[in-house]
Amino acid sequence: MKLATWNINSLRVRLPQVLDWLAQNPVDALCLQELKLADEHFPLEAFTDIGYHAVWAGQKTYNGVAVISREPGCDTTRNLPGFDDPQQRVIATTLPSPAGPLRVISAYCPNGQAVGSDKYEYKLRWFAALHEWLKNELVAHPRLAILGDYNVAPADEDVHDPAKWEGDVLVSEPERQAFRDLLDLGLSDAFRLFPQPEKSFSWWDYRRFAFRRNAGLRIDHILLSEALRPLCTACEIDKAPRAWEQPSDHTPVVATLTFS
Image (cartoon, rainbow, N blue to C red; front, top):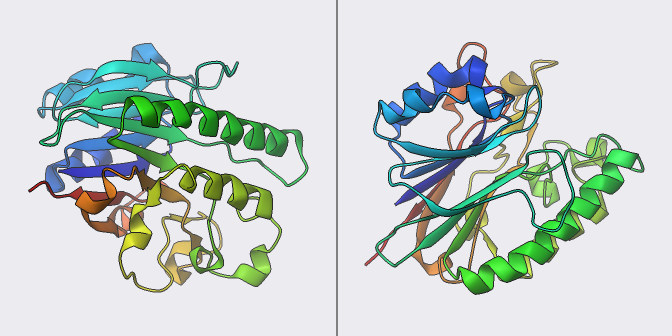
């Protein structure tokens, strides 16, 4: 069973790329972020035509998340219960798996703009709310995967130039601590369960030929619960779509779960 995440930076613009990628990579579930379209404009038929189901939380111009899946989901939740937020950043649904129900969450975590800004403080509050919600989700759904754009590079090895980025948003210590707090719930960073090439990133700025220079960050992650960790047999970053014409600035991350 393959689970993937991809911030596509406008589904309206990049729907053909998503469909092409799914044709080449028929994963069981694809979590999308930054749909940037209202609910009523979600292109459901384009996915049903190729054999997929979808749940989504859309928002005009900004944000928006979805789970595209081979099997229909159930018990779907939008946003963080108890956290008053008009921004559409979380969609969770339960999918069937050979081991039993599998909770899949697509999350678009706040960027934070700049350390010390109002948006940065919102980001930290949002992560705290996510942490509290996941505590309960993990009790209710022991097989849980939360995939998405976390807007946090967890360690210096996830940054192309740690000295240049030191103290900035996406790498600041409070943000990294918020990410570690999620791991302390019993979640594991699937990518770091395996040896990986150095300078492995999932996001590259559009400016200054960043992708060509591999001047990126690893900010897109797949976190797995304790029940799923031993089932994970691979996790890879697929850099190919970042080289396509008019690409997203992010590229997919894919985890493989193997059930005996």
